[in-house]
Image (cartoon, rainbow, N blue to C red; front, side, top):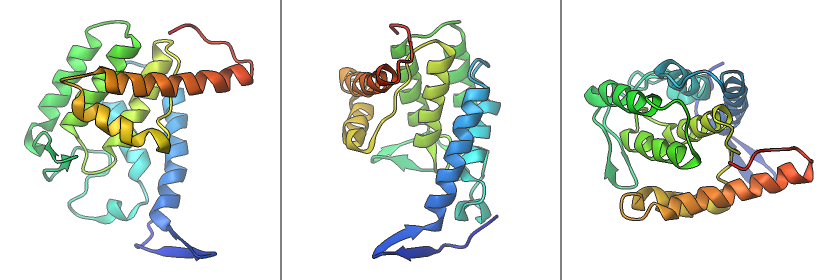
Length: 196
């Protein structure tokens, strides 16, 4: 179902229809990640996550917006230029080839892949969400305790992405803090996990 740009007023708050659609889609994407957690990471999986997230949104009806496919127009993130559209496919293949050359990955490997993915910024929109879903998938695939970057961590997360080359500890510490919070939830519900 495609909605036009619309908002709903709920007791003095404005809710954008796209926010509702993308929230629903995000739950579908998490289901997809769980179903494919042990599959090798491929362009097909990455593009499918984008397709799931953006289907039914106002973006999906724009001629220039490619749902489930790589961007058609240049974009930037945090004032930093990203890979040009004509180079995205080549850069993604190269990134995946390098990443998949190892059969197992550590927490640090997964975060490093995420930084490189975000720098390519392969989609017109939704790159952060797709990137964080990929991290979830890869944590599950490699028996690493997953983590969720909550709203209160976003400024630290963005700083960590921008400072990665000079000081990767900012992002690693943010992700480890998020992982510790997730472990606390697992502990509360008495769900066992490994030490990764």
